Length: 167
Image 1 (cartoon, rainbow, N blue to C red):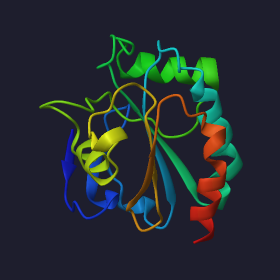
Image 2: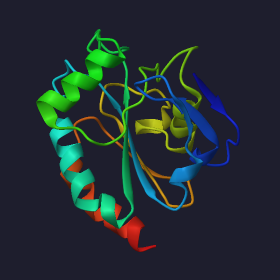
Image 3: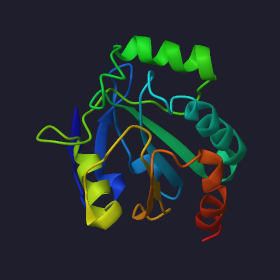
Image 4: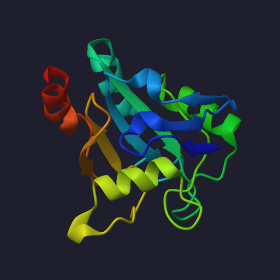
């Protein structure tokens, strides 16, 4: 389940968590968000550790990391929500919020990701997400600051995150 209430910023979206609870993003207002499409069987899966490190380092200063499992790239997220949560906790100690599995591209793309892709197109203006672990950094006002490629290590975002936290 995902619905857009206000497409002017990310705070108008409702999303389902791994346990099926629907939440609004509005309570995240005033925080810097790092939104990532994830997968458990990808060559970039080890980035869960980096995402968790960045989350633990900067969460108390106003950063939230939001993970969105996606199975659109090579069937690299085949598990159900319970299996995904157990995998992330067991292998990477993930404590940041994870949401229900979604599509990020195509006809059934999650409305939040439609918004993110339009607000921060990729290389040569392409809106399509090309792989798992594409990252979107969102300002405290809910507008998209920047999009990062899958191979970008989460630790390499710390300067940009700190810049937004200081705004």
